[in-house]
Image 1: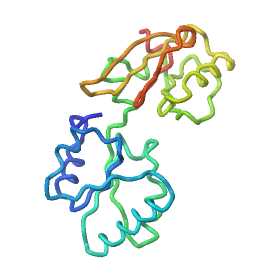
Image 2: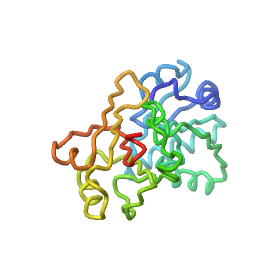
Image 3: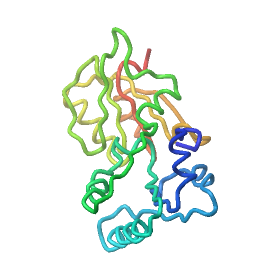
Amino acid sequence: MDETSLTPEAREAINSADIILADNTIHKSILGIIPKNVRLYFSTGDSGKKHREEIDMYLSYLEEGKHIVRLKNGDPCVFGGIRGEIKMAKALGYKPDIIPGVTSVVAASACVGITLTAENIADKFMVISGHSELPAFDTKCTIVLVSCEDNCRKILGQMLKKGYPEKLPIAHIYKARSISQRYFKTCIGAFLLNRVQVEPPSTMIVGWVVSR
């Protein structure tokens, strides 16, 4: 998502930062509002030598009393992978402030006019990553798939095996809330039959709310 999705608190954190360590998937419009005097680094996202260097860099700047912002997409607490970073900071005697963000889970649905719940249609929704176990089919549960670009066909195939209807509607949203946003509707059966290509970053909504 682009910089229009930033909360006021997130903007304030960016503007007051001395150091920003950003995911390499952060939208260029967000990077564009970072003040010129702020030192910007990009996280490697791995656990090897470079990750160790990132930790050492954290420590050196914290010891200098610098204000560090860890910049992530969407809401950091929804598949943001920050649990390990929080534990590390606390172990070193620091208590990080976590700023809630606008997760693509709800932003993607809202920007194409789909409500994840609806009276008499869906009374719950479940967010599933590309590597999660699928639940049994529940006609009143909307499924939101994130980080599933590499194996979405496999996931949808598993849905059919678990009793999900072939005609269950799907909404595919690519690059939600950006000028590059693309969106289409189909159903599980048609998606698999037509070998639809899914590129990151994408969000897929599966459920009867899509067709209402």
